[in-house]
Length: 617
Image (tube, rainbow, N blue to C red; front, side, top):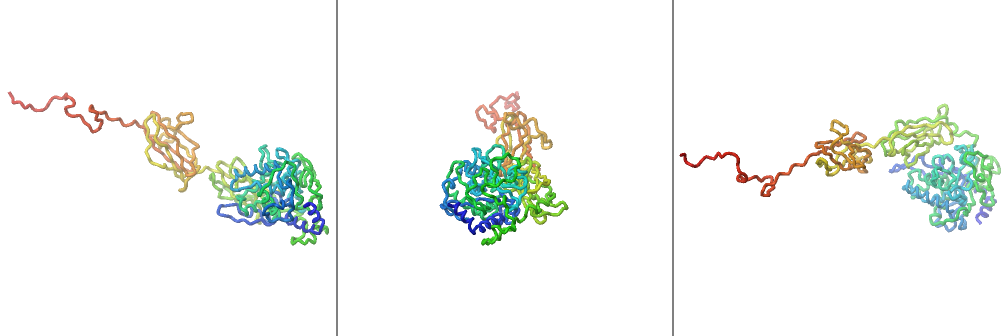
């Protein structure tokens, strides 16, 4: 019924309205503006979708999408375009493998980016409008689509102009890019957003598990909370920058949130409307390749001719000249202006085409302590061969090397548009826990020019003060065990220094830092004496409690030295001595140390000196 209704509309004078809506949907509608907040969210215009944001910024290149709406019984539907109609159970359900991919992607993102609050229903809604749930679930058990799903080439004829970025590997087109796969990624976006969702060692946009996980990461790439409406809208618009697209996705999201069901793979039904469809059709395209797709699978790396027309004719395959009086937009009653052809025809040189090289716009000496945010932001300037600044060029920044440093938000990729001065500024860079040097590379999206590398370094966490938490004396008898354990607190500029590496060494003396070969010691895993400990780290409060200390048979005073990166040091005195001897008890049993023998207790061996009391003879 809905298909017949749509055909009647297209055959009637309302055709012009449909065409105007399609143009509006593809003209990068206004996305919500974003400003910085107290939590330091990425809010600059360089990182958010905007009305003038280039198509390269979206996941799909603002490619066409299905405009079909949920069933009439969808509770409290969001504002939508068109007229909803009743649907069959298969149309309302989600194919089993496709549904499993969405739910697994949600589970993964809940662990890696819990603050994003990505619902699987959002992936289902986007999958519905992008490819009709992988063309009704035409996937194998591993999630690979049965034939590649390829959108029309983005050659500027009714669509954005995005020249080839993958040498035709994913879309089979070495001249222009096409959106690819069940989630319709353009190759330039897949190059940094692609993820391996089924653990087969590769990221393939034609695999629903890979595509769903990649879409989830893409929607969560900024510090967005998708449980809030404003951030949800921003994320959807960043996927395809169109208000009509936003409303359609929200409609399906609401429908799936209120309940859906699983259906067998391959039994789903494709939607019947598309945002670029201004011609009559007899029903859904049955070709296995997908929307505007090549028929049947092709090996990556092959470069066939531009995708051949499917039973649903694609507008790019038969573009209408801008001045053609048959242009369906002419005389449109829609308030939107009639289409006048591509804003930038393929033969016209774009700003990106004029870029000859990139220059460092001022970021030098990129160093940060582990866990901290780099003070300086990386910026690149796009220039022509003559050194003139080039604005409105998309620059991609990629973190390379063995590091866990990322841009704020947790991704190793970011993109920004050059301003009038030709400068693009990357989001703030956050140091991970892994220390050492790494590289951030800037490249021009859509043009092959030499990348610009920035060297960055992550240094150890530091402390400038180490102090014991208690001052009790640490003593032990030879061969014994010290009572209590040494506990210290590390601080940096007065604040607790967490995750600071501490080295503990039993040294020969305060003046000689060499490791002692006798006296107190720690016990290793094998029970043997160890007199240097490394790899110790303070906790979240800057505290560290050392293992128990033992003493060998050497008596004396010893020194335990603790040091950290940043210059903090502490010497702890350890004393090993024999216990004080116990006094001998008296014969009467009085063990008191004050007891003394009576004069008559022992016979005297000295001669008497007492004068005689007898008279002289």
